[in-house]
Length: 159
Length: 210
Image (cartoon, rainbow over all chains, first blue to last red):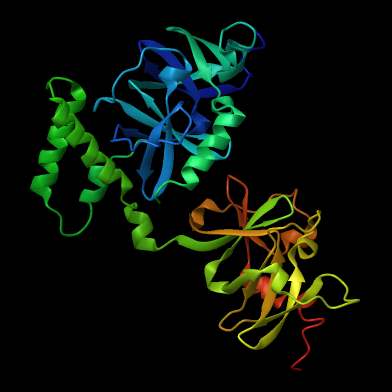
């Protein structure tokens, strides 16, 4: 294993949705809060569950289950929201649980493109002790059309 | 970073400690799943948390670090200037063009009977691009209207925490960098109102009273 010790480590925030483990680059994560009531955003794209008010800032909550074709689950007080940056926007992700902050060697992360269905939303696959973990790519979580629809809907939302 | 909204709130002065402990205990029980909540109870917990999360943070309220800014578009960049420098904003067609004037001078506007020079922000900030339909003149001044700034778009008034602004990146043109106080992570550039108003380029033609 010589030559791997100098490779950079990547901090990952691990979380669970629908029994599956996923990760976000910790650098993208701003805050974790317990689930709060979500205000619906009727004119928003379906992948947006609604909006929440984070200290005066309107933050859209993205529906990971829908994106990853998992069965829907009603909002539960035990859920958590991961507030993270997606490109230039702050977004919330509703997850079942945030499990841990972990580190992976860059060499243990593989490019997911072409390997996994819906891989446009996945930045890579990390090989961790507990098994493989998909790393989300929030920059591509919303399609351009969805991002535009979200911006329009947010512009019309009450402040 | 995991924040605990309720504990944060509890560090304020006169607080209902008992009520907070009760709420904490209730919320903790709810999250541990040991307590079966009815849908109504769950909804109430979620609503209560939503209200707490919507509160401005204590630090922000105490230090008053939020900058009240007017956001504008100049070329491809979003700029902000503190609202205290902005006296007025008007649609650009209201400006009177002066034939033969050299940039950055971009005409005159009349604000409450006073004639003010207008300067092209694109030129001042080294931005490229053609004039747009949405052009606005933002009238700046410390206490009274002093000069107009021609921008591509002037949008919302926003509140940005002062700490969100980091040092300007090296990629900015020198002309722009001198006027910049900071840049946010999402690319909003904060202009220094005082430096801008003291910029010599804004005085070259502003000698009508002198």
